[in-house]
Length: 384
Image 1 (tube, rainbow, N blue to C red):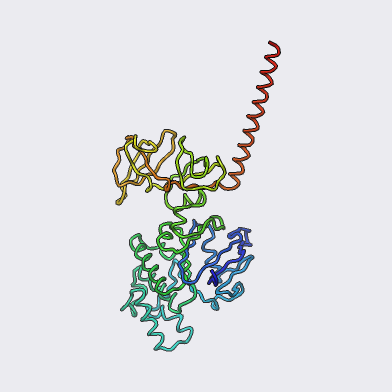
Image 2 (image 1 turned 180 degrees about the vertical axis):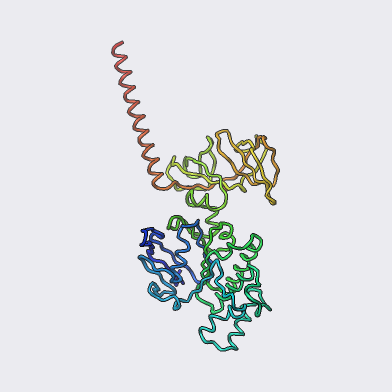
């Protein structure tokens, strides 16, 4: 990336009134013209990043850059960004036209230019003919379109979207996902989108930042994040997963459930403790003797496009399976999967170090016990 549109350099945020650390040394760069998503649970720090870019709050430390210029001390109205809030923040006493035209009137644009640009953006958000409609007579989806139209009317360098779809029903939210993505691609403006909805992030984004406890845990394309989660938190937060403790015997060979399986991952220590992730849609139900593992079906629910099946193996591990094949509660079935379906995750470094210390301790104890036994045997033989 040569010229990032937004850059965070060692940015932290602490609320001084109670000492809460909201962001911890955040670093990232955003490329112009892409759709970025900050994904995380409530309190993870994602909205704080948005507010820092907008200038609504100040960073406790670090530097924030917009198009190469440090903006930490730049007033809100001098930043070439616009925010779309969850509440829409529209003026209820104004018409659709007046709401969208408001930023242009502040800039004292001519009446002719305002009319032309409002008409153009109304076409973009599919609200042609709604110019004179009262805001109070619009549906939730229509109000959202007005808020987005007002945000892009000036073609800012960056549009910030703070969970703008969360108040919509499921069908409308899905429609707006398509429309937002299409609008961003047509305009070529950088979008920074905040959400806690994993499916929303996967569907809309060029690049996702997964956040937890004020830190960026993993970043990458939606495919990267879903297929190669970096740790247990990401694997469990993004989509649904079967996560099991395992041992990486050697490159491309992993052991879990008492069996060894080929995998496509390498670069780890021999016999390193790891976790494996197998997505429920990657599991295929077979006859018991044809499966790599055997499980007993506990329950199943019909989800429209697939059955969601819960099953247990002989070791008591729970397996979540998405299958188009209907199962029978109580039956034994086989589970089949390929090496590509097994995703290996290293343990957190502290956990790995702990396991290594335990392993070393156990080995030393075994060696000591073996030495003691040898001495005892030798003494016994001497006495005999």
